[in-house]
Image (tube, rainbow, N blue to C red; front, side, top):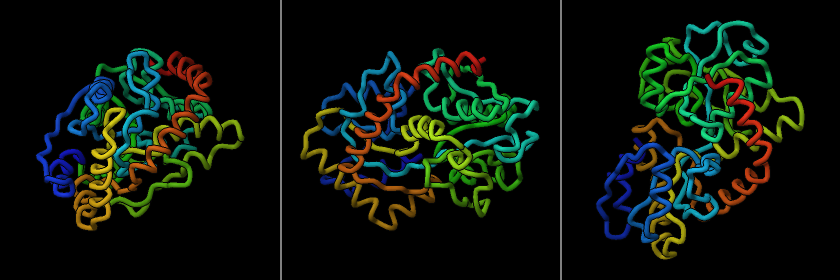
Length: 311
């Protein structure tokens, strides 16, 4: 939805007021490879829902996030674990060590390398003995997740930016208790706030429940790559500096326009957390390097989690 909003309202901030065309391309790995291999002329760029760092270790991934052209980050820091209201748990600690029913997540992970961000709730579940199963599916995008929750095929969902969107995407889900918060999985120090159907997020932020330095180190390696940037605009590597600057300046101008931001937040339900392109470029390089420094540990975790929870 943010891509379609930007296609209508961002062009006026770009020199020449160009026409923008939005194309949805799935799966995400294919889309990222496609953008990576485009000419660096600024005519093709993408709006991403994650930073893409986890996904780049997939054997089929062709990109390196340290080399993409970062145009801007428009939101980030948020991540959430939701459960259906029928589950016999309140917030996360109520399920610690439980022998009750499993929380069921849905993802598309043919191999351990495809687990991506789902390693976060699985690792957390493993640390605190939360009963968990991950259903391996052909496709598990947002549209599929909504349907699976509605049908009862799954009973939980780990995602980013959804807390603010729910009252628009599925009015009444939160206020009726059909779905409720289980854990705030956001970037440390950036807890979720209110949405249009609830004054505040009712459950603790995950990192506050960790007790050892080792847990914090692994959690930061896992979650920072996912949550330091959510919606972000990127182009292929080596983009012409003048074109890149024009796009960066356009998004900066738009994100400093109160009406643009208010309208985008109202349309998408996503809270803006703007980071300019130059700053975001440095952040993505530093975060990717930190992730790759812990690659061996994360690879081992993915293999262990895949074997234990993916069914």
